Length: 468
Image (cartoon, rainbow, N blue to C red):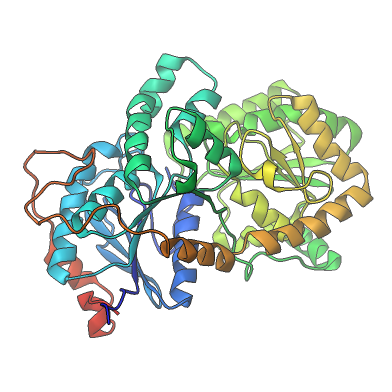
């Protein structure tokens, strides 16, 4: 009888503010954090224990309980300040050393590693090499696609987004990981045909999920009551999320002209940004206000600040149309959440979701770089009740059938049955990982005692980190 497989999973999401109750809208803190948290909680309900490993910075605690079998463990690297995801890769070797020391000290055994985004992919592959466990990597977005779909000066974009290094490292990660999980068929085509050259049998399409216990339809009378409670009147077009150029809020404002011409009392509600916006974010929102004024629609565009998580579903329900107008969007989870609440969605063709919905039945899609086309799609939903009713009904059904977290988690676990580590066994403790992580600099030892002291007080097995 062989050794019993560990029932513990290592999730890695190194950038942004990963927390049990994250403040969405903070830098690099959005849909990926939702993905990791919700997937982890669902895997826990299936009997696994999940450690979400992330970077520790500012005044964050070393450990935090998310739910009954899920915890966040934070490990320092690169100092105490926030580091953008574009440059965090430079500090990943230090982070890997700190995690390795902790895992060995606690004698933790993991069933597999699932890393998210390329910075975490570097870390996940290095740890998989060291401990001889399968590594499943989820890119969320792909550097080559983002590079090719962003407008602006190429030299300036390279300075901001570090594309050359990112794409080079992504190639190494995709080559070395055991399974590559993309969220859309388009992403699969990109990693097969572009400079990545990934074998097709290594790639699996698993879309993000949503929480069907929070996002669900309500009656028309309830929607009207919610709209009054939120002090909204008339037809509402909603867009929400973190403040970022690629989200295309400026494109959406430009697209509203045909909507406002046809529906006299329609309003665009932009609920964008974070609870405590930095100066750069304040400036970006002010630019949107100025654009609305230049176009003469300032009285038709409503700006609201960060929406607390507990209000999110009701904002979806209060809207008559949800608009996803991104210049570049790996998937578009906010649109799925809106659809799940019974709100018709108009989504960008510059992303992954549009390929997975039936146009005219489950959602509408258009190119936000064509303001007339995008605006006409929104207007058609507001002008014709039969279109709105059909999208509301079948969009919600599509969300429940395709995108719940339970189904997503099961697809991930099915992959593990085929994912045997490509390495014969763990690399000795005094060896370096055989990947792109060949750092030779001196690195301080992690503060294991501090992590252990702040861990949730649970069963001895859980705290000690032994295999289930």
